[in-house]
Amino acid sequence: MSPRSVRISDAQWTAAHLLWRYHHLEQSRKSCDAAIVLGSHDLGVAECAADLYQQGWFPYAVFSGAGNPIRPELFPDGEAVKFRELAIAAGMPPERALLERRASNTGENITLSRTVLAEAGIHPKTVTLVCRPYDQRRAYATCRKLWPQVEPVCASQVIGFDDYLDGIGDDRLLVDMLVGDVQRILEYPSRGFAIAQPVPPAVLDAFTVLRDAGFTSRLLPERG
Image 1 (cartoon, rainbow, N blue to C red):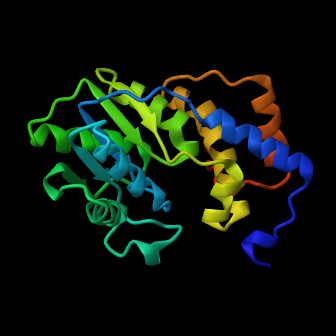
Image 2 (image 1 turned 135 degrees about the vertical axis):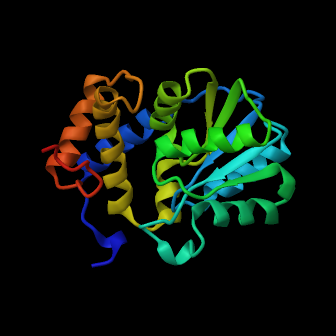
């Protein structure tokens, strides 16, 4: 069975759309001192970073990320290297595109990129977090916890849920990720990884519907 042929009921699609909207923060664009480009399997993040740079929203960006476990064939040298190459090909000057190649999670994207910026003599008060559309809330909460001295603004490709699904080509993976990110928003504050975020009852209900329906591949391992 191909990823696009997975059977998802109308109720499950409704729940997935609700989680997609919840993960978007809809923050207003703001000129920032630097950007952190969070690695992932979504190549559209690199294009978004290059577009934002060319529009003048930040003067420098750190491309952050190690190997990608979902699509390793696309990232032989790691996420950061691939994203940086794509951004430079789209017109971003190489000297403005810094590189962080070790991060394997969002927390490390923040902390290791902070070090890269400091080593380059850049000490921002504001940062743009360029990420997948559904990573915005968790990226924001992580940055506020781990780097409280800066004001983060999240930015992503402007795209609807259905069009994004068409681009990714794997319905189950995306719904699994939406579910997994809600769990992290719920769990990570108690683990010291992120600040707490409001989770409306409708979001909890949608999360439960999808989790109980088996969209669980991106859930955290149970704590022993």
